[in-house]
Length: 310
Image (cartoon, rainbow, N blue to C red; front, side, top):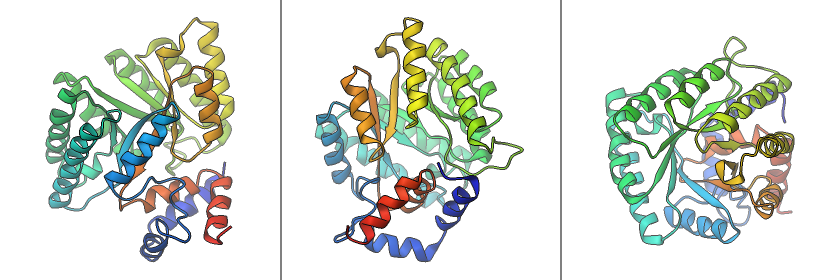
């Protein structure tokens, strides 16, 4: 895991227009294809192909059409239409029906009511067709409003939805209890965003300790939780905690990112655990890609080797 300064550096690079332009030119295309380790492609057809391969190896998946922080209602409407088209394409393909999305992609920064309406449009198409939709969590300024919108939809009887919480935030244990009491499905992640110390834990040991506490609550109290981590220590702890309390493997699932720790993913499936792979795709892949580089030194080394043709 990179230190906080290095992580912040990669987040800064993610906002570089020059780097984004260069990456868009070479990251998904021969001879380097360096981004394809972590991003399935730029089209829904490529994402479906990746999902079929994932299913063939015994995993479930969730598809995420990458994009965030749109600046106009027209862009938000376009993103919503992309998701509606994706739902139709997934139905036609016969693959598993599970999606992830971000509220800023649906216009939250522009108009909250419009973002909620866009989310309803997606859910009204997705839920009758048997989809489950995860509402991803973005950086800390969006935490409260994301939970508020989730709660609003839950009270309106939308039940095939889940929400993501980040253990790095000080507030998460309070949010966790609130959502567990609600009966919501929760995906627990450590958190890929750089937030100030007044809001988030800065040391890896503190984040790990928070994740451990919250994970134990999820496994014992929550509905079908998702333990989203690549940390072998956390995964081993989850397995031991569940086994010691008679929690069966079908009561929860591990979630991991496309292209990261594929060896660990395979091991878990062989041991009988449910593993869901988060498959991102789309033309707006650069910010996501840079956050992945900021999380682990091995990711940086892999990309450098790819760029040099090794």
